[in-house]
Length: 130
Image (cartoon, rainbow, N blue to C red):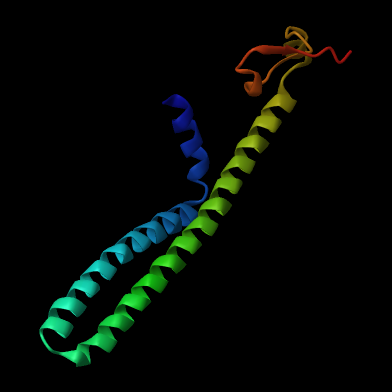
């Protein structure tokens, strides 16, 4: 849980992107509810209730809801990707700055040439670069 809380420190730097991403996600979700309701009204009120004049406005409402849902979903994806990239860049920049400020003795105490590769299932991969 602690590593997740550390990442939230970086997300607070971009409140507009975070709020926009959540807002567009909520909007896209709400538009999903509109389409079945409009379809029910077309069938119950316009067709069975013998009001053909309601078909065009209700169909227009359904098409607009569909377009708004897809537009909101597309914008959410673009904003979320931008948000993620900025947070990861800030995280990496801070990590790089921290590593640059470590004393040389810290590096001398560590074994050189030893790397862990997640592709090997966490087993140590020995590389002797020197």
